[in-house]
Image (cartoon, rainbow, N blue to C red; front, side):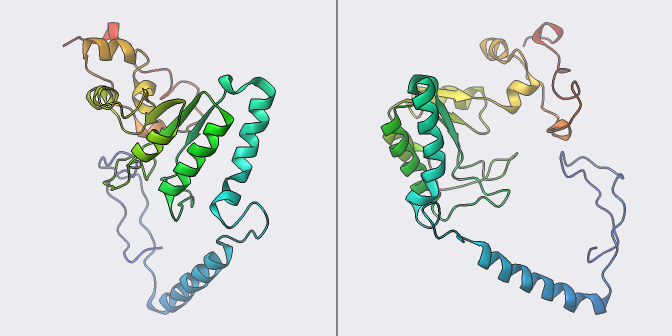
Length: 226
């Protein structure tokens, strides 16, 4: 359903022109009041679902962090803290996981993980509020970086020059690359020679194909070094 019967003209994954989407059905005037009421009911249900735990795992910050910290402690007790790392994305705002104060959440987790003595903390940049694109934000990882005592790793939309810059200014110890590594299996060599990079194909992300989008990107020897 839609306000129009015109189909989408660009692919939602890569913004390329396409005619693969069928035209939606335009809402009738008599259907709109019911749809408005559906949104009202959804909003009411959402409010009732927020912070609905009233035990030791819900409500305040300490309680909401209790479960992941218990998991980390159990693992460190079993195999040793020097073999354990944690990846956190407190600033993410997708899949209904937004937090009311992500900076405080990240700081609390960093302080708590210090007490467990884990090897590294891998943080997703605040600018990656959505999964696949960078957004302008006033949030920063530096307060969390200054607190965590182990190896600090950042990720989220970095390229070669940005990675070198944050390392040089001591904003992090290491930079992780996801999509660029997926599309460039020889990424360290490409960075070394400042070679042209393969562009990741977002339409193949999270697919079940064992090859397409995972192991079919060309290596550096099949490209021209510039």
